[in-house]
Length: 393
Image 1: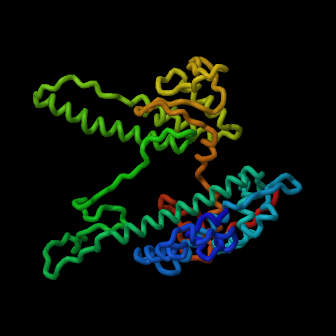
Image 2: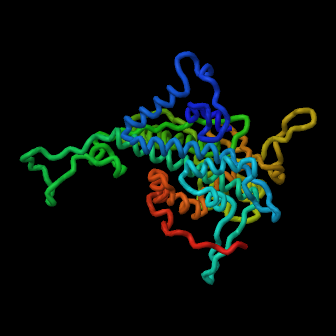
Image 3: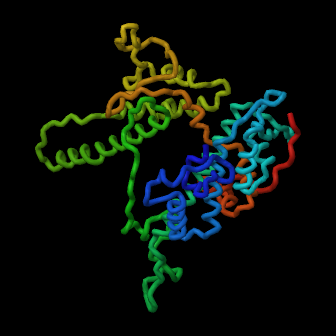
């Protein structure tokens, strides 16, 4: 339950409606939930966040936790509705988001479809689609709040713009030259990047008990970095030695281009296939893996998992064997990893139906409304005009 998130529950209540938080003893003798929360609030204040923004950020996080507590039940038409025992969580989440509970439930359990003739009608969700809408909203709220926090940190750490000294002649034809680029512009600390420092911090190569889409993306990132490192350091260095006539013993460098192409090729790579299958109405994780092998059965970097015999011995699957299940193996530079494709398609669903961002634009909390005023890439999410009422299907 939401009570497990103790930083948000210093008073023992989980964001106005969850389970009781653990006692302070669980934090040790030198700390407590209240002290930890006060430390977070102080840090946000140091970044320039106002008290209202800190309050709104905590409310958004509380709403995310309560959305995770929502469950749906079937109504008389086998369509989704919020389960009666979770209606208090719905109302608490809506209150924290500054929107109406009825409007939130409507957007989580239905969507409006516009026909080609200008009419509109409402399509009700089943429980599976409602679960997806709930999870998508929780992810989007957290992601946009996280982006706001990153922008706050960047602004706080950016060097202040330097005004030209009195009498300075260092001016452009227009009369002024900014000495430093603003962090809001997404540029470096100084124009030209002379003091720019970038830190890349990613997960290392992963091979877990169960490897899902997250592990595939993390490992592909490491695969790309490995290729970049070999190409920009080792191969470039050897080419320079050859140009200058420096004798160097023959070095056989590993080449992971085949694995990179398998995953990222356009069209036809695994990532493109995942995108394509997400647009197919009857697609599922089984058809996804079948398409992987339909396109890449002869590829050296992908194979079916070993067959486990009754004796417990493992035996390589026949190359021509059809996929049996949702598992596949990719040969990375660091070794083979067996992936479980269950959930690949649902995890890759990224877009919320436009009505949810529109609803959040009407939030009574300025911070939340501003987070959804633009899309994640900086464009407008959708017109902020009220959505006309739709005719139920």
